[in-house]
Image 1 (cartoon, helix red, strand yellow):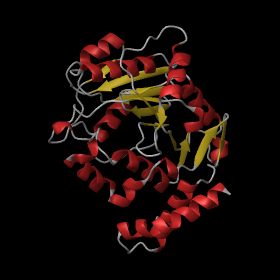
Image 2 (cartoon, rainbow, N blue to C red):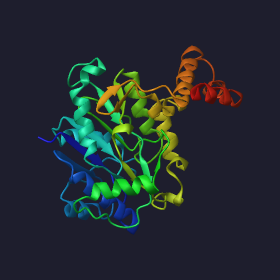
Image 3 (cartoon, one colour):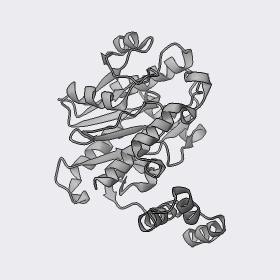
Length: 310
């Protein structure tokens, strides 16, 4: 029985660059030990790519009126068609390396540190490294070291917003709204829901190198970024409003570093975020934008920066 089932709804394989980076990503997943991969959807070229890469393909994912696959259907299909301990929804442009499985095993073996029993509810996530990738990866021996070297020479660590994967025990996220994949908001809700249910949210950034292959938005209508589409507004509504889609990696409860789980170190950004959440809880009757302006006034930024440099 696999330890992890990865599931994803790739973009069409019609654009040569998108097709190349998606093959790079999916191939990297298949090289991990004790995993399986499920690709969902009917996008052009997807069935052929699944056969080429030796992974499972399930076409009958539910869609919204615009034809965009629904997260709720993806979760249902992944759960129904796998029996692994962990499920992982992941964007199809993300390259993973063996440190990913090692991080999962570390967290699984240290659930006592989360003050929960084995098999308890938690979610793993991390920041990504953004990298321009212009050609198919050479997956011969030593590819991980070559890629890691390129990442640290040419890549950049993405800010702690916009998560590209979520790994969780299969008992988690039994009910998921009908979010549209590839649009903003649903990933923030994943963190919000975990915090609401009092699950551990584990930031694995210090323990992982996950690589996002940069691309444009030509695959979306009008070539507009994902946050500029009507489905994003619907995702925000389904998430319960703007306050719930402000959750990011800064809201993690634990961090995996040097093989051990611990509470995240307080940083300037985490301090501001905690202040914002505190003010929202106390002044819940005030408009969301007003709370944000109170928590992050420009006149306080220099003082906060000085506090965390001392």
